[in-house]
Each structure stands twice: as C-alpha cells, then as structure tokens.
Image (cartoon, rainbow, N blue to C red; front, top):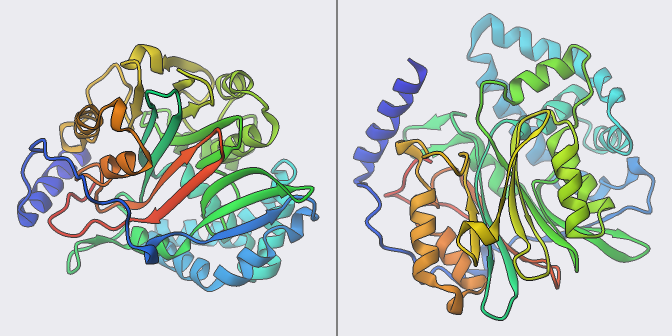
Length: 387
C-alpha cells in the first residue's frame, strides 16, 4: 500500500511538472557552475583533543543545525502520540547512549554539545538519520590516460516534508546551506578530505590523497538501517555506524586493497553500497553490503571497462521504474566517452535530470591521486523529478 502511494505521488508530481520519461538528452553546459554555489572548506585538526576538533564548525553552523533539528522534530511530531514519545525518548535518554560510541566519536559529540548548546540526544539523532535516508548516485571513471575520477550526487530528505507550494523537500532545503568541505589534518598535513553537512562527524563522501576515494550510498532492504538502529538503541552494539566506518577507513587504510578489505568485513549498522576508487588503472569497485556480510563486489573492469556507476539498487537487478537514475547516468556517461572524461564531464552527467532531482543537495567530483575535491550546492529547478 505504501509503495503504491509512492508511485501515485511521483506520477502526480511528474505530471504537474510537465516531465516525461528520460529522452536521452544529457546536460553538457552545467560546468563550470556559478562561483557562489561552491562549497567552503574548513579544517578539522586531529591533533586537538576530540572535544575541541569541531569547535569552529559548531560555532559557525550552530543556528543552522538547531533549525534543522527543529524541522526534524516537527516532522516527527506529526505522528501524534508516537511522535511525541520518540521526541521525549531522544531528549531524555539518547544523550547517555552516546557514551557507548567508540573513540573518538563519543568525545567529538560531547564537543559539539558543548559549543552548539544543543541537547546531546538531538545531536545523536542528527548523526543517526544519515544512516537511513541517503539516496545517491556515485560514479568512478578512468580517462584514456589512466587518471581516475570519482563523482557523486548526495540526494537526501526522501519523504521528509514535501512543500507543495514550492515543490521542494523541507529537509533537503534546510541541508543545502550546511554543506562544507572538511580537511582533516594531522601534524599540519592533510590526512583525508570529506564533504559533510555541518555537525555530522561521520563521512559519506571522502578522498585520501594518493590512496583512495570513497562514497557511501544507501541500500534498501527489509533488514535495513532502522533494524540496526533499533538494535543499537536497545543495547546490541556490535555493528559500526556506516559513516563512522567510512571515516575509519579513510583514517587508517593506506592502500586501495586495505580499504577494500576493511569495507568488506566489518559488521555495520545499515546495509550500504561502498563505492571505492584508487589511484591505479582499473581500481574501482562497488561493494554491496548487508549489515553482517558482503553480498557482492563489482569491479570496474567487469562493469564496462572504464567506468562503474551505482545508485541505490543492486547492480544485477532493475531499479524501480519510478526511480531509474541508473539508465540516464549510464547513457550520459557513454555519450561523454572516455576520451572526453574530465571533472566537468562528470559534473554534467550528474547535472542531468533525473540524476539531478529535487533531493540533490550537492555534487562532488574528486581525484584520488592528487586529493582534488570540487563540491557545489545543487538545486534542481522545475520542471524536475522529486527524486
């Protein structure tokens, strides 16, 4: 019933927006975008005590984080007494659960509480909800000189407050002003870089110069992130938060092979796709994870040779017909071709509707060999698909 309602909803929105099926037209002039949508960069100094690392981010973005949490609580409160019970539980009990997190995350969250003056339970909730609502497109591609590029759209906020007057998602709109590039430094040198929503201490998009690039896409399933979160809340904490896992890999792995091993073996809080790129020819793969095991590792060399692409569906299955970003993205990558591959080329592919949609908050293109990162705030104007 819920799925049927979703189909009716998306068809209604598409009709109102004047959209039809993807017609094969790929965007070719989106890059370079306007300079005013380029995302700022801030430094996370890992030599500082964990409670002090996020001070600058907290002070700059605390009002936006508070506003977003307020929006989330208002959405939850719409579920009546159940919603009220969830909010009360978060406000009164979840803060203590942050003490069960591994180092350095529990102390980093304490620092965020200190400098934002936001309830600790609300900040834990803010960090949790990325585990289950991240709908994305990730691409790794190799040009004819052997240089690897890694691009991604971060789509976030599905079913989280549709504004029928403005044809926008409430949470997606609130997140766009909070996007920041982070440079994690140790001994005054970059250890890795990431693209974050301010106040989120895990990593969904990151690059370790000279080693790897890495993105995380949600994987839908019955044994999904909600199950893992529920188990964590009631005391079963053997699984890692996926965003923390990604950050651990960027911190600790010193090779593509080592990163692949870590991403394949650890128990997780939620099923995901890890899209991993390296610095050498053909180093690109999609690791399809359940919470407890790896279901498949799809190598770029077997995906078509010069690029591999993942949205939010197992690559051996067809995507839902109302959410087929895979076909347009594959079509546009093939039209672009290996010889014309570049940062701008991938950005154009990711700017093609419906790969770009109402949920898209940002587009990033990374290059692992040099550690280059370009991130731009994205907003799909009508006519545009809701996701």
